[in-house]
Length: 276
Image: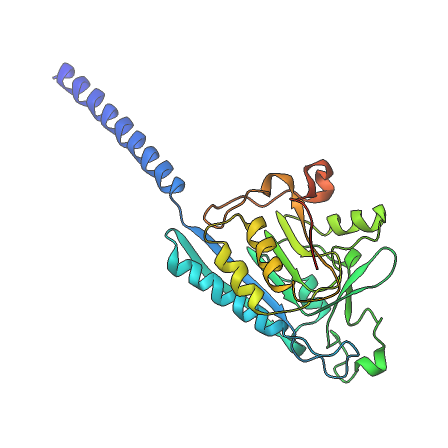
């Protein structure tokens, strides 16, 4: 009886070990084929009211970007997608942008200005407080309607600043460093180091390109298509985590470290594309 019990216990233990090993293999396989879960957040401005820079089609760009990511979800296996927030026009404030919850893709589309020698700024229409205040009252340079570089820290994996000047440093290493310091988990920061021309169709092509191209090439090739019909040269630029240069939409990557924790891990991704 004792021998029989020992034999049974030994084989039960073997069975438990085999079951646990199989479970671990299944778990690893499941992780390897886990869906690439994409989230997005948008801040787009069409109507600037009495802003001296006039209106832009920022909302349209954001809507097209959302439609493009939706199409990617429907077209490619292994991808899920949801939009976390979608702010437009007067809903877009400097406070909301600065405190936006983490998403895979954060997209801002509207005006961008050179604020001073160390800061560029995202230019919104509505101040975060004092709803009756206007551009005429505040003046174009007020930081109630300008989110400066040194007040910005992006926790998002990919950030698209579809606006003028945000990646321009004017030859200043201080301004260049301040742009990099905005990256707090961001793998790639897409934008322009010059005046640019907002064409909401660029979002559609950018996201279409993502299906077969790296994110880097998808951005540059879309810019080449929709920034070409203008006389003032446009400089499309991507900055970020060096290991992200070959990122694809179909692969799920970890968030980058913050720039401040590892400056040598960051740089310019690819070569600037000058379009004229």
